[in-house]
Image 1 (tube, rainbow, N blue to C red):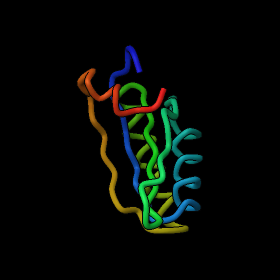
Image 2: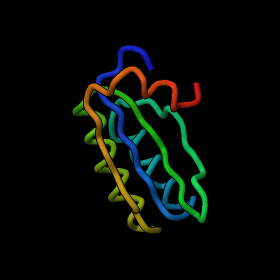
Image 3: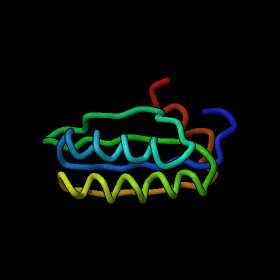
Image 4: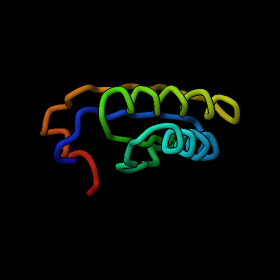
Length: 91
């Protein structure tokens, strides 16, 4: 995740909502999908990266789309994340 300006995370209950959200995020802005995870008990999340404005736009689109088919648990945009976060993502 070198040279990134922001990361965005969306957590949903159910894979269908996550896939719908990820599709909307990637179509709405110039962001890259870093990974998605199964958390447990039906909770799943994905991480996107890109410039701050693109990540904000992508997460907003993802929340809108995911909420139509399932439950959005949380969302976050982190501008300029510290490099130590790299270790927590599968690359």
